Amino acid sequence: MNAETINAIRVKVSEAVKDKGGLELIWDVAPMPNKDEMFCTAVIRDNGRELIATCGNFYDFQENGMVDITCYMKRGEGDLYLRQAVDEIRADLEQSDIDNVSFDNIIQDVPLEAEQTQYAIFLQVAFRAYTSRPIDN
Image (cartoon, rainbow, N blue to C red):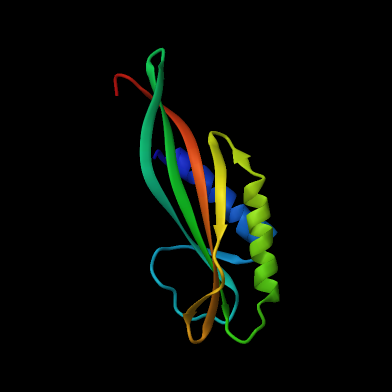
């Protein structure tokens, strides 16, 4: 997937998490240490591309992937606020289409017990991106 498309996805997910959910976002794939506040981690998983057409001097591709978002909070702080934040993030992404990217299925898992001291909710957002590359590339 090209850098411009990945950046567009990052910007939209960041806006949903920070502006709608009111949570800090960390783009990371490694387990996070315990923190006192609520926060999210996210990672983009690219599932590859499929040639859908040629138009003039360009190949047109459909690229599919997932964004995994995990929202954490310290156990014992009550989960209502985190659930509301996740609902806001989900609603914002469900209603979003950006440039050449559209978000598809949004799967929300039941709350996870990441560790004894943390509580987490997991979202998985499917997306489709349409990109073009020159045939002579």
